[in-house]
Picture 1 (spheres, helix red, strand yellow):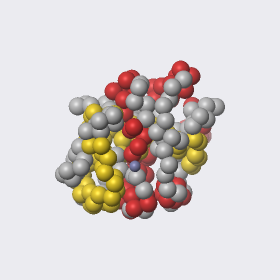
Picture 2 (cartoon, rainbow, N blue to C red; picture 1 turned 45 degrees about the vertical axis):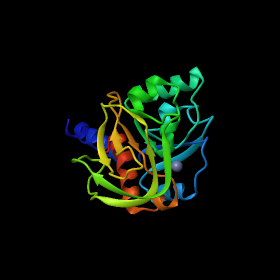
Picture 3 (cartoon, helix red, strand yellow; picture 1 turned 120 degrees about the horizontal axis):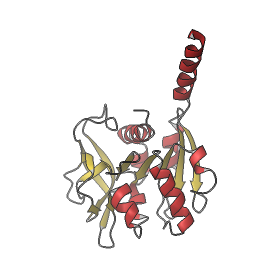
Picture 4 (spheres, protein in one colour; picture 1 turned 90 degrees about the vertical axis):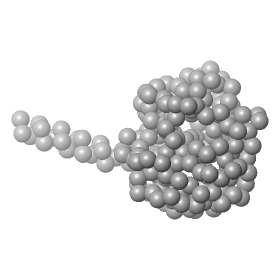
Length: 222
Ligand SMILES: [Zn+2]
């Protein structure tokens, strides 16, 4: 009996030590190569990159623990939506970065329940802003982070669900305020990070910590 218990503990330990399998989803928006250097600095994660239209094809459920969306392209076919919805409802993690909040805007189930926000045709953006970031409350996604400033892009005039849990915000006038939130979706962990346009953000140590911790929390490792 002791041997069997010992084996069970060993299996659980090995399982917990397995790297989180992360898929970066791109397509529909240009971005700087510095985006990828963020993930090269996270060797503890097993990361692949899959642009549209292959992003949600194949054996997504078996191969991926956390989807990191950095795409801005309609998920328009019923097959794509089914795969993404199945993934979301399975309890796996989703991190929505920056311009990915501008995609899927014709899919109410997605933006109302999963993303918790939507970039509208009347929303505005502002590049090259020095943004003061205030950490709100205590949460595993922002653990260890103090208030900081970052040179990046703001969005304003978005629809934001009143059910999101805001983890960081700004007083910068070209922004709606909320910069990081956990969505109201209950079947999986979903984090949105509005920041992340270019090199200055991608190379920012606070931003990298935020993204890494968002991935780890979404994947159930925090
Ligand atoms: Zn941008």
